[in-house]
Image (tube, rainbow, N blue to C red):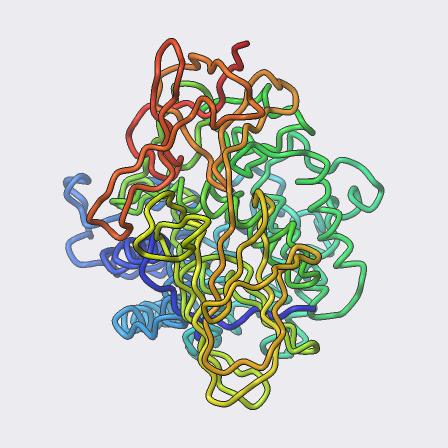
Length: 605
């Protein structure tokens, strides 16, 4: 079993992912503390300055949309905010965001006392009575899970003992409520979109070893999805996707806490049902209109409501659990695809706002959220997603003195290997290359984003293995240089393994990529273009078709290179069509902001 390197030991360096992290961090700091806390204040009876009477809602200092005081999901966003802020502190030691985090937690503690010492909800306790009475209410357990998650992360990543104390008192309320429900309506425990509860209670048990948290975990553990999966049934088709994915996190955490193999099996069966036996869109998504698409029927569900962002974020978390257990590159490859075509593609590169869905039908446009007037569920997962990169890049295999590079994101790693302190700088080269003068800055024959330099610095000589994941999309031989000398590259089980006595060394890697046409399983006449893991979007208002041999897309797509003065020395991944009735541009889907675009094109013979 692998172990992910802690967030505090990884720093993301300048580049595309660093840019997106910074935009996200600025948004977190931009949001007003009072607005973030507004629904907790209202529930505990605190009158906010100037808001005893709201004469003009448009000018009132309040958050609206799903955070409006009239919405049954109000308050869910603050939990995501707490988790994201704590993650930034862990990886960045960002004291400004830590001060804001601590202040918000202290206000939550005050609200809890005003509520009687246990309840710390942005919604009233009576919402749970509606669950007991089998009356409709919009996902109160979902809302409360976000609050508990945020407080738990504030303790785990930012050391807030006050946050853990708030959860401790709230858990006593849950003990009594679940006691009561077991007697009068056991089904209420599994209603109100409770999917995340199993993981969070198990996580709290692993942190505190307090048995009450395991009691709560066990009360949320008997889920029908697990039984269906165990019986070999399709438990997901046409079911709400984001309500079910957190169950796989819960079974994963239960396996890590208890060691019981049945929990691992549930997570593995979930992945098989969700991905292996279902297929995905070219972006990695599997859903339409919030619901799971039936197996290999993606074409029938192609539309403007594909790939809810929450599902992308949560499936990456499922894949991360499975990768940590197995080291299987299938999971790392899936994560990479989702990072480019979900985490980046569904975040506005200017405002940082999410798009709830990622439209994949012809002539689509992304619908971006606003900063203060929407607060969809995807607002919450997006602010967390942009903090996740540090814990996806490096993993350790302590038993075999092995360090694995899982994702290729410019970053700096601090770790301990044997008796040596080790620093590794991962840099995206972004230079020219040719067969004769590889990694020569003067060469400008071709250009590639998939050139990487790893600078290894050891406090003393140390023998260990560096294992570089070789992505599924590599076409040709990996080119490997160690300290400027070309070395033979042997790939085994998806990794390039280099075992040596390291000191101060440099490893240069180049992964040759190419264009690929990816057809829809049920409509093979429709195909999307991918450049490595990156989905390309054609800038057209309709599916005007592509003439050419789909086995050789380079014959009808030509790179368009433009030097810029931004982070990168040239524009990445843009192409223009050739020999078409009407030629047009393709660009990375994550670079599309307000343009009308089409992803899948009809093959013209």
